[in-house]
Image (tube, rainbow, N blue to C red; front, side, top):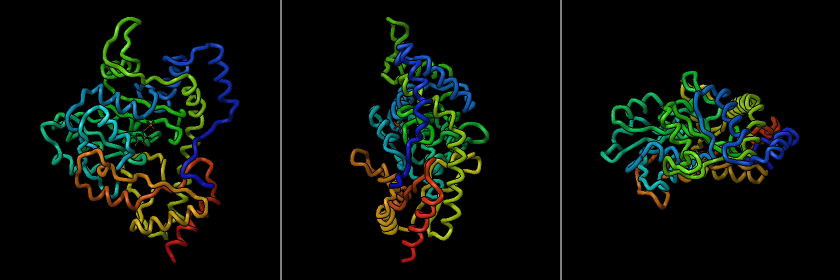
Length: 359
Ligand SMILES: *Cc1c(COP(=O)(O)O)cnc(C)c1O
C-alpha cells in the first residue's frame, strides 16, 4: 500500500533517550524543559525571534483569533483544511469567503476589498500547500482598512518568503506540527508574532491565563503541549533538512515524469523559497479525477482529495459564490509524497496516471 503521506518516524532509540530524561525528571507537561528546548531550537532553525509551542494547529488558530480580539466578520479562504473555517465559527464569528486565484490556489487579493464591510475585523488566509499568499497585496489592503491578518501557515515548515521564514508575516502566523505534516511533533502547533505584547498575551492564553499561582491575567485555555511531544520534535528536527531536500527531489521527479499528463500544477510565488511539501495535480474534470483515483486505489495507491469539499459549501456556513474554489476542489488531488516513497513507486504512480489518461 502507498499512502498519500506517512509520518516520519525517527529511530526508537533516539526517542527513548529523551524519554529516559523525562522519567528521571518526572516533569511531564506544563512548560517543561523539553518544551523550552524545542522552542529554542525551532527559533534557531527557522531564524525567527519569537514563537510559542502549543497543543495543535487548531488551538493555535483559536488563540490567535482571541489574542487579536477579532470579532464580527472575518474574511477567509474557501480552499483550506476545515480548521481554518471552523476556528472562526468556534470563536463565534462569521467567515466571509473570498474566492481563490485558480493558479496559486491562494485567496485572490483582487477580490478582498469588495468583501470588506464595517463589521470586518480581519483576514485569515492560508498559504496553500506551502505556497505563500500574495503577502504584500494582503498587507497593503489590511493596512488601508485597519484589519488584522492571520496566516494559516500549517503547510509551510521550511518555506521562506523574500528570504525569511514565511512564519514572520501577518500580525500572527500559525502552523501545525501534526503527524501528517512535513515536520511533526505527533500533535502540536505554534503561533508566531513580532509583537511582544501579543506574544505575552498568547503565552498567558496557552496556560489558562495563569499569571503566577493565584492570579489570572486573562481568559485562557489549555493550549499546552507535553514533554513527550516536544521530545518527538527535538528528534525530528535533526532530520528536517533531509526531509526538505528529499521532498524537493521527489517533487521535481514527479513534475518531470508527468509532463505528458493533461493537468495543471500550482503556480508557486516568485518570492518564495518553497518547501515542496505536497504534490497536487489539477485535472480537467472531476470525472477524470475519479477515474484516476479509482485506478490508483485499485493498485493500492491512496491519493487524497485535498481540499474537498470547498469550505464555502459546508452546511453550517452562510453561502458565498466562489466559482474557482468550487471548480478546483472538484478536480484536485495530492499524489503520495513522503520520505519513504521510492523512485519505483513514483514510476508506478506515473505509469498508472498516464495509462488511465490514454484509454
Ligand atoms: C493541519 C492543518 C490545520 C490543523 O492543524 P492541527 O494541528 O491538525 O490542529 C489547520 N490548517 C491547515 C491548512 C492544515 O493543513
